[in-house]
Amino acid sequence: MKKINFKNIKGYIEGYYGKLLSWNDRIKILKTLRDNDMKFYFYCPKEDIYQRLHWRNKYNKEWAKSFNLFCNVAKKYNINVIAGISPGLDFDFESLITEKKHDLNLINDKLIFFLEHGASYTSILFDDIPNNFEKKFGLENEGVFHAKIINEISKNIKENIFAVPRIYSDELNKENPYYIKNFLKTLNKDIFIFYCGKYIVSKNFKSDFKIIKDKIKKGLIINWDNFYANDYCPKRLIIGPWKNKNLIEKSMINGTGNIFTDNLILEIINKTKNKKNKISIWKSILTNHGVPKDFFQICKYFLSPGFTFENKIKKITYNENFLLNIENLLWRWKSPLSREWYPYLLNLKHDLQILNNELTFNRILKTQTNPLQIKLKRGDN
Image 1 (cartoon, rainbow, N blue to C red):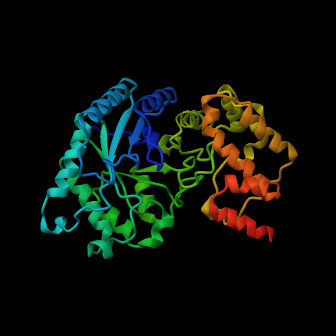
Image 2: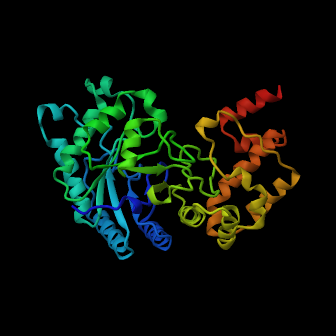
Image 3: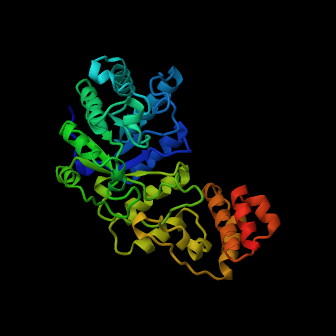
């Protein structure tokens, strides 16, 4: 089995909802990873139905051919592809007790398929499944069952296997306080684990759990970084300098699914990481990508996500020039990047107009969803 240098596990995660990259887009990401000294691409898109919803089904020959080509390009660029499967929605967990192997065999076959078609490593993911294990499957010790699946599969996989637990951050622990302890105590000791830290969206990677801290010390935890991800907040775009300044050597970045934006994000991370003058470097990067000066006048709305631990709404002041800057960006800036940013800029414009009671009733009817139309109309009464 090939040993992985933990310090070199850095790269891109295609692990978001709502977007599915084309193979050409993925190859563009590979080029950006190569140019920014990142060595891993984690293929686990939620919108690939054969990866998650219908994980038991096989990929067709055309997909296999495209995946193989993608992996060959990755190897040419010295990039490792991790390919994952997410069986947790409907795996036959009782089969682990009865020692039937049907679902285990299907997982094994798919991961072998990934390896045979060029993947460097494989992964089993249990993230984002309902907190109903006991009720749905009539079993206890969910974390133990998840770990046992990974352990069984790892016996047959020749390369290192990666795992994503269902409780993938401290803040999820309230759903099942015993899960992460049971999972990690059962899991084979040499398996790498993706974890988000204390919060699902963080600006630094910490954990209050001793068992996680111990794994970090042993180099077995990889930070699944959701700083730039926006599938949970689709009206927002996060494009500021990277906050996790000390994590570049042990983090992988979950993207947005907007190809030009994600390539830009990877460059921002690599070039700003632990620099003291990261703001000026960040502005230079965006300028080199054709972002107009108008954006830097309104950029405070795009710098970072809202963090769980803040428990407050940031109060950002603005003046009338803000809308002029947004207007210029909306109607005068034309590029592949501007097309990806258009809906975020337009949403911001509408929200600022709503805040100041400047969005006319007719525009509210045209631009807002029905629940917001009703809410805003009530505010007029």
